[in-house]
Image (cartoon, rainbow, N blue to C red; front, side):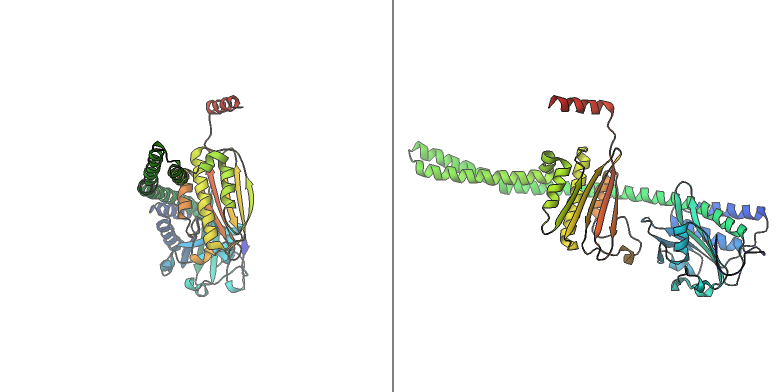
Length: 422
């Protein structure tokens, strides 16, 4: 255990002099952790119970962000409850960031400012409080959930029993927080699926209308013109006039070329033919080489995947590369595809402008920079998206998705089919 100034000795810091009292507090904590379905409600309820039961002045519950790169204040006793959701601390910064990074408790009896780990947070008025205990909230097997802090105005000693009790409280709260976070993620995923389903239906209808319009205004009109020129050519030939017939036939040939190109474009909008021709690795390579003005580095596994995975990953790479072209100003792009027995990983990295997610508050899985469609496509195939970015150091979009297991019958059938085609 790390300590600040002053010895750790009696009287007991939290005033819990017997096991029965400790058990009563833990039971109160258990009830508080069941006080609501969301993280904020549970954290706030536990903070109130801790201060009331331990005769401390304030309690802060800093919860690990979904990005696992920082802490957010999600539970606090008055007058700091107004700061809930507004205080963010990167891992490694401040006492709480140190505790989260090292998974060890810290006790500071007095003179916090002399501790090199201490980082003043004006909104939390640390100068008004003398002593503090900070413990990690860890549960098995989920791991770190956040950091629990208690503070007192007057100087107070905290002994080993105090820290053990707070660690026990932290374990109880960690389990509840992990459960609440799981419920929130599942609810968010369900909402994302609902939104994606709605957007997919709307996009399909819009695409059908566009294709119908294109076919009517383009392909259909050109076929009518083609028929007109061929009919005219036949008429000229019947009259023994080959000159005009040749002109009409040449015009008809040009219309055939144009119509075929329009048909290829329409088909490509539904499913990229390059996937059928080259496979996912070849399609990604062709896609990357089509980005103008950048050097391309490719590391692509050439094994094939189920159709729905290949289409989704191709569209994700297409979106990410469009973002590189529009926003990054990159000179170099790296595209990597790794296919394992259980999952597939796609990463698109660039050396462009990058950005600083921390300046925007707690980042979401995609950093909030126009990659919603990437996240939605990844979630549709059961995958996840992680964005890594720093100003001036580029951006990397990494997607991981499960690969469905093929049963022996399917494998043997595919093998037999492959053998029959050799």
